[in-house]
Image (cartoon, rainbow, N blue to C red):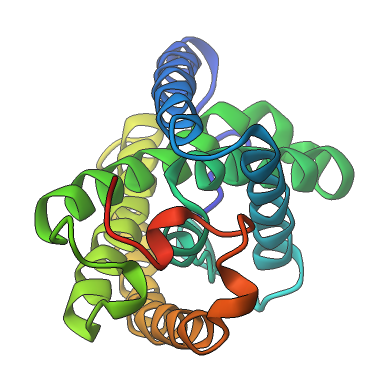
Length: 226
């Protein structure tokens, strides 16, 4: 999902700074909401776990170049369901920063573009969950169709943002559109994989409740909304 240096440059980067700032602002809201129902220690621990997870998704999990970008297995909904939206947002931003600073310095100038691509779909998942998941339902009791909807929103959002940045930066030429289409088609594989990962993680959490209901995961994982 990386937008490579040069795809968007010059004066067009102003928009990236704006979307990055908006993503940071909304992340602060999610963090504040999380701290209303969790301790600071719990929030910090879950954020660190999220950042480590994101780093693993970027650097260790298989990834390959397709079309305009790279296909990564970014388990955004898994982070959301296990850790909560605030820690997931901080983990996505932090994991991306660590990966760029220490392993791909050439990507750093594109940080605001790439962090927007990761965070806005997460915000959409958070909004969707509040609309379609009953307040009385714990996340461990979700069904396949529930997590499929969230995965489709997250991964579809990533594809939409990559397409937007590519077209914004490089126009609507045939080669660029072909590269964007190739990337989008390849990302369909992630949409198929992620719900299975989500359900496996939720089943593990449900089976190990004595270990997973101790503040290192979001309160909603095992409980109704407060």
